[in-house]
Length: 171
Image 1: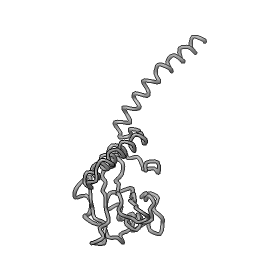
Image 2: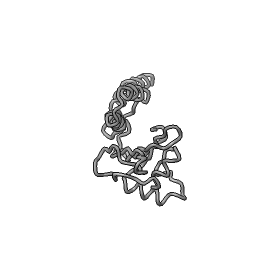
Image 3: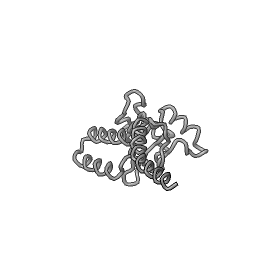
């Protein structure tokens, strides 16, 4: 009996590292790598303070999104004062997103709340129109970009490649 207990304990101790390795490989295969928020923010901040070129900044934001959240697709829309609409400034898959969205579109209106918009949590009163727009863009989350209490743009994120839902801690 003591021998059996010792054997079980030894197996548990020996198999735990193997289980951890198999779990990490499985998660990597399914796009579920955990990401280090602090490291990601630190590296992104360093890179973003090194340039003022908008396209370089957008490419870096795209790289960070791709390596952490792994969405199937995403786009960055920025407000154009001259045209009074949100213009597509960057897209992970050209042709998948419309070149512009009206300031009165359901997505822009929802983003104006300065809150994250999760497709699965859309309020009932706006559900049909907003979900329809999100579906047409194959998107699951809208992230508002706000400067001095004014909406200057938004990110539109597609579903995660892993199939997992987005959670508020992904923001």
